[in-house]
Structures are given as structure tokens and as C-alpha cells.
Image (cartoon, rainbow, N blue to C red):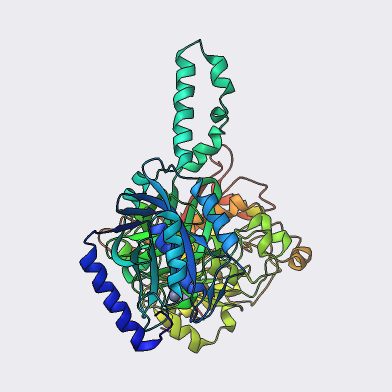
Length: 611
Ligand SMILES: [Zn+2]
Ligand SMILES: [Zn+2]
């Protein structure tokens, strides 16, 4: 009767089904956990275009069947549409091991087998009958199922009685009901151990008995760690779009935190970033095969909230937290700098040495929308103690390191990098990338850069700042200029451009220098913490210049200074640093003070005199 194939078989099966309906009006229900459903999805995903089979130990209470875990049919199993042979010994062994974890005292242990049928075969086949009835005989009736991918994943269950008759059973995914029907043995053990320990603390007698109880030998530190919930930080954008694909980011084991980073957050730090898992929507769980790989974190988007699976955890305790790159990263700047305003601002930084790099990073932290950075220098070992970059950056272009660090703070900040000096950047490219609301900051190790930046400032009608340090960073010098404001230009203030001139070392401002240059001029660049003070002053001034027109913004530096400001980090000999004269003698000279002096516009200035 069951060796008939194709349509004839369908008819026979339908007749058989009807007979069952008349004979038996009993209803059978199957309850499975999300974990089980995931196992099924993963199993069919592993063997596309083939049959596949899983076995589940569970509990039967009356006509209700509950399943929490499933056993794969093993590495020796073969799957072809006509032959679905599982590795019985291995699967039975796995099922037994799984079953040991549960308390089946509320009912009777049962086993279910679920396999996949390919398209158009929506019922058990003739070949399934012997296996189904054999299992049913062994357990006094079982529920077996079929999985379909047509193209969406679904499952169907049938109750099979000892004679091999099939009655369709409904099923639902319900973690809570399964947990109640077949509680985990481990948790019971843990609870009894805790109770016994409590009892021990409160009573003096009976200590001996408790010590003999093997259940008390539990590593409480480990249990505590196991009970600590996982934290999964998910970009809000992923939730909004029900993102499907690989999940990249960081896992911090000591806090059990998965920090998922948006894949389109370009240029972000790649150090230590790993594949954390995958995400897909419930509807499309199997449409993309690459998403069905088993991985550490597995997010399935349902309508209201996602279901998150972690590793092989049975009961997953997960705190899901969504974060927004814009709102959350800058939430603490709120009320100080209007985020919507500063996001539309830009800074051009010429020179990515100690000062320029630091200024740039501070502007990123303030929420600036874009930066253009230009420098041809490469991070070397002697830079490390005076730079935001570290040993792992040695050998890389400073501008590349900057882009990465900036993205680590604000992935939405647009950073344009040029591995060359500002004067060598193609003016057409600069024109393309420069924003209307920008500021240019000259941070190179020579005055020549200041003249270049002054020109760019006038060309694009953006303010400019020139910043640098004196010998050993004992002083800092910050100059600013606004086009069409009647202010003295860089040439008015510092005289004619002498090119990249290292001769006048005493007043030459310098944030950093290469070793070769240091030898040449015997220049001492100073400690980073002294350089930082000047960089912070400059960054604040840059924000003031960018936000000046925002009426809600309170300025921090600009109203208090003139065009030239000398910052004194610490007093040194006047012969080493002539700027010391500005601050007078003891006792008026003190560390961490500054003086601002106005620059005078020269009507005969070579640069601005004609206008
Ligand atoms: Zn089959
Ligand atoms: Zn001038």
C-alpha cells in the first residue's frame, strides 16, 4: 500500500487522514521553545536542497508534548531527497545527554523526530511510515514533524499512534510553558544548594550532613557569572530596518557585553573588531543562506521585538539596548553646543602632529560634522609619547590614524584625508570638500603654513587659526583672523613669508618636528601635556568661531582675547624663549596664564595692503 508514489499516494494518505478524523477526535498540542525553532532553522539551512533531520527529547503530559532542545542527527548522517538516513547511535546518545538536563517528573519522557521535506511533498512519505510507527510503538505514541521551506520556513506536526496512524497536531512556540513542563535540573540543584547554604548559616547543627551533600559543591562565583545577563548593544538603525547580515563589533567577556557596530559606520577602529554573529528577519530567515550560519549572537527580528540567541545557551538572559550614534554619543553635550548646528560645521586642519591631531579629536568630540586633515607625516616611535597615536599606529600615515580615531568617536563625522601638506592638496579637491561653514587651522611646524592657510581662509571666506608652541612647549601661540573684518592678516602680523624657514628657532612655533629637523635646529618640542593645553585652547576658539552666529551658544574664549594670544605653560629663561618678556618678572610671572595682544593692520602689507 505504501509503495505507491506520486498522486496515488497523496489520495491514499488523504483517505487515511479522514479515517483518523472520524475515529479519533482527540486534539494534540506541541509546545516548542525559540531555541528549538532556531535549531530547526539552522538544521535546514545547513543542508539546502536536501532532507535533514533532528531528534528532540521532551515530555508528554496528557496530549501535550513539550520540547526545549534538539539533537542534530550527526556528522555521519546523509541527506538526499530519497535517502534520509540519520546516525542513530549518535543521535540517541545526544538525546539521552540532553534529556538528563530536565526534570521529567510531571509527565512521561518522549522523543520526536522532525525532518525536512522538499517542495510539493507536504505529508509523510511511504518511507517515513516504518520509522514513525517504530518510534510510536517505543514511546506509546509520539509527535513527529515535517519542516518546509517554501520559501518561508514552517513546521507541521502529527501525532502518531502505536499503529502508525497520523493525526495533525497544532504547535506553538512558548518558552514559558515548556520551562514549566520540563524544568532544568541544574536550576533545581542550584536552588536546593542555596537553600541548604542558607540553612547552614542559620543553624549550628546539621553541618556535617550538609557537607556530605554533593549538591553543595557548587562554584558560586561561576554561578553568579552565569546568572549575570548578557548585554547586547544594537544600533537603532538596525532595529528600524530589521537589518539582515553579519554582525560586527566587540565582545567584552568580563561584562558579557556585545557591542554591535553598524557596518556602514565607515572608517571605524578595526582593532579587535570581530564577527559577532548574524541577524535576519523571521520572515526571511532562510532566503539568504549566508545568514543561517550558526554564530555567537543570532538576532531574529519579529514584529515587536527581536529574539536574541547567544552561543549554545539554553535559557538566555539578555538585556537588549539600542543606541543611536548621534543622540547617545553626544547626549552629554546637550545644552552646551546645539548638536544640529555644530553638525553642519567643518574644520580644515593643516598638520596632524601632537597639536593638530589633538585639536581635531576635540572637535570630533564636540560633535563637528566634518574635518579635512592634511599631513604627509607617518607615526614613528618618537612621536608616541607626544601624540594621541600609540605603538600600534607606528608606520601609518597620521591622517589615516586620525580618520580611524574620529570614526571611533563619531562614525557620522565626515573626514577627508590628504597624505600631503596642505599646500600640495589639489585645489579642485579642496574646493569640492570644503564646507560653507568651516574654519582652517594651521598646526604645522613652520610659519609658512600660516601664510598658506591665510590664503585659503580668504578664498573660502572662512576664519583661520594659527597655533603652535615655543621651545619645550613653555609657551603656546594662538593667532586668529577673519576675512573681510578689517583684521590684520598673517603677513601684517608676522611679516613676509620666508618659506619653510628653520633659522629663527627662538620664536618659531612648533608642535612637533621630525628627528632630522630636531638635530638641525636643536629644538626641544616639549611634553605632550603642555602641548595639549594649547591644543585645547585652539579647539575652543575654533568652536567659538564656528558657533559665533548661533544665538543660543555661549562663547568661551573669543570675547576675551585679541588676535594674538600667548599662553604660558611654565616660565623658563628669557634667552631660551623671548616670549617670557611679555609676562614680566617675578612675582607676576606664573604658570598657566595667558596674555592677548592685538595685531596691527599694515596698510602697506604685501598680502592685504592692496585691498
Ligand atoms: Zn520524509
Ligand atoms: Zn596684511
